[in-house]
Image (cartoon, helix red, strand yellow):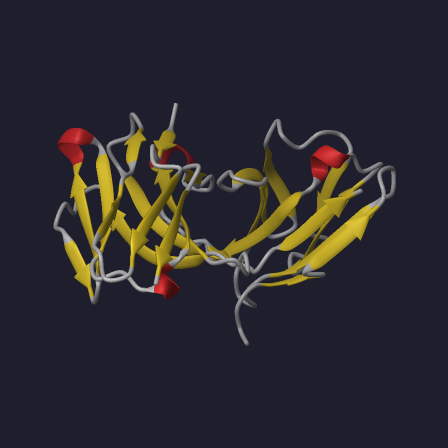
Length: 116
Length: 115
């Protein structure tokens, strides 16, 4: 399977715990995106990377959230001191930026986080 | 500001009925892309269609058709002869030139097709 993969697919944690999600993009894609989708809403942009550089962060990304893409390949999204409001589906997407205007984003299956 | 509105929160139809899902978008960019995605209960986003702002031709793919009208900033989606497998949440989305990297999604329409 050469699509975007995310692990784990489901995570249940207790409030106050830290969690980390992983995203593996399509292999040649140099851009990687994180979105959050809460119940009954559409996905909302969180942040994105061009190779290992984090180029933009949404105001939704509080200081308890940190994303990395250390070698420009896979990415991790960590949430510290989780709160019940962090319960959501976390979606990763990747694209290939060739310097043209538009790069189609391909979405992964998501990680569903439940904070008890 | 960019925004996508899907006024229909939930729709229920009986199998074989036709159903139209509405989408209205807002952007000041003249160059943009519009999308429809399907999200079944499993949660994965399934890409259905992409249209750019310069192509207003309607499109048909099997039982699916899309009506893009720039004059009303709408990009509606019609399913003909609906089937139970069409039951899902459908999202309309926008990616505009000033921020191509941020896809703006609407709130979604939950479609239930009753056998």
